Image (cartoon, rainbow, N blue to C red):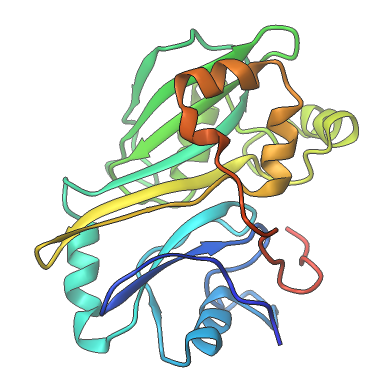
Length: 241
């Protein structure tokens, strides 16, 4: 029996849960995973759930599920509104001016896509920066591809990043996966504001805390320093990326 996934927020017809890195949100035709987040959460809550969006397997953080079949479509429609805010944190290769705001709106898979990037901290000696990203659309690998296009790929990204640099960060700093975290989610639904925030996953927070840029990041965004009362779970042995 898997330990419970952290529940970040819950209503009558929805729940926001924290996804561990390397765990699929739901099964795909190509996957052979025995455990996925949807099944894990269904068994934990004792009710059927439906994922309203996905985050990449190697990423961690907030995922919204419907817990009522009649509310699946309304919840999905609410998630697509302009008032919805989905914020991610990413550690990228290369320096960026602290405090800068960058709008990335290049198409992804021939579809309109927009990512707003805010630079929280930068570190010249290791040529890296911590950024907060708000996505206005939900295209496949949107943040990863947008950042790679401006020469600032997310560290640990095996598809859009630099293999040599990723190996250096793995060997020297213990970064063993994609440095991307779905930090917060908020949206209007049936007269209420759903709000949830997922503390940085312990493995990623450990890497960031060891870097000099962490002090500047906390000064820019104090909520980054939130921790967990208990170490959140892994799905048994973490599957490979």
